[in-house]
Amino acid sequence: MIIVAIVTVYVTDNVLVDYDDGSFESFDTTQLRVAEPVEIAGRQINILHNTPQPTGSPWRSVGTRLRLEFENETIESLTSKDREIFSDGARCRAFTRRA
Image (cartoon, rainbow, N blue to C red; front, side, top):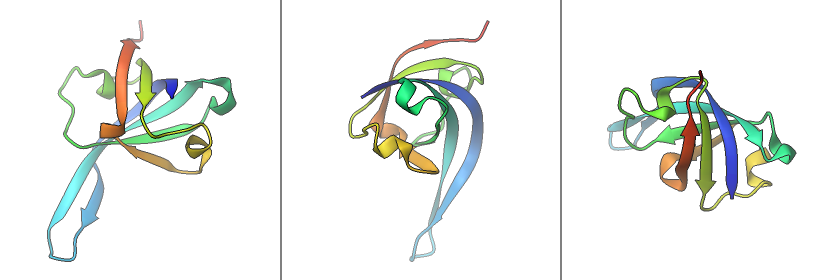
């Protein structure tokens, strides 16, 4: 599935996962607002990054328009409330930075 979305927020160490053995893991998050397809336009999606994104990455740049390909997502799965997706399931095919 292909969507076009706009980066609204990038937060470092936004999600913290505690494991039973006492260890933990944190994930940076990019919040996106879907622009296309129209069926889900306006929907908010949070991408949890498996690795921190470098400074200058389009994932970190508020206002950047991303064209993304999702391997396992469908329009139906992206309409659920508070949708979080790990970044290894999303491929950035193109981006346009805000002028």
